[in-house]
Image (cartoon, rainbow over all chains, first blue to last red; front, side, top):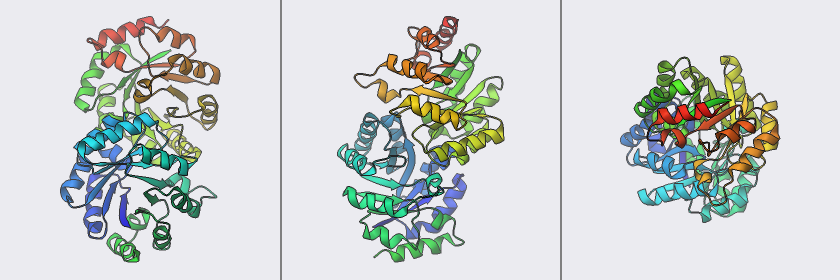
Length: 207
Length: 207
């Protein structure tokens, strides 16, 4: 199982500083959606230039113009780009076409999808590299949010998936047991007093 | 009925050039999602600085972190910010909270929502200023796309709405007849040989 850090910071400078701290302990470096909207794709280029050996994940959460949005993100240096699972199939197909052209990959973010298991299978059939079983920051704050339900949806879908939304040192072993290809940690790393140590501890918990 | 130009260009420079051409003929200047992702919120600031008398619409298509994303866009100069109708209610509520704080507005983009009429009423009740009855660029290219269906959903919902996806000189009168508060024209303006003349013609078609 790979470890992905979700950098939910708002400036390229803060992202570069965080990436420099945690890169030795992670496989995938994610630029969060608010960061990309705030700074533009130059943030992606800066992170890839600083960490050419890492997989750079641009969380575009594309809802339309799939081929265009994925294409400009790959051209800027992204290795993986997200499209929303709530987007239409033609948007996902367009994004996959851009990924094929650039020899990169599309990840479909299932945030907001009611039946994540069915949609996961559909988008893998459309050419997504993997799906993200994802509870957003807003959803995690809602009463009744269940991390276990998210996990079991990944386990049930039987397609390659990452898990995002509540990954921490307390939960990462269960994420691996559920069969996730990637565990995505955000606040558990960037919110820690020592992000490098937090990333190293998460890494050490992966067997 | 107001006229909105959707600037689906990819650089701040191109957006400033287009806005300078069409601003005299439109009420609302929209920065498209790919433009914001490519250039960041500095593009919003640049357009607002150049056109302080116009309503600047930042098409963020927010899916998570509603209060954060809307907040940084308003701080950058946006007057209206979009949240996706497929987002959870807590995301829309968060974005509305940011709008209230900044004395600005949230528009909910109903792209990808199956039952647009029901969702339109729900999000207006949550505090959205209006909804966008929207067929995306990818959806418009799909076989079987129906502009009339989009129009009739706006008419049926009986809440304030804008219409985006196929607005042209041939259709704008029907958009007004359906009761839209705003007609959003993209390709019909930026794809025209003379964008200023195209915007002026659309404006002149509004009674």
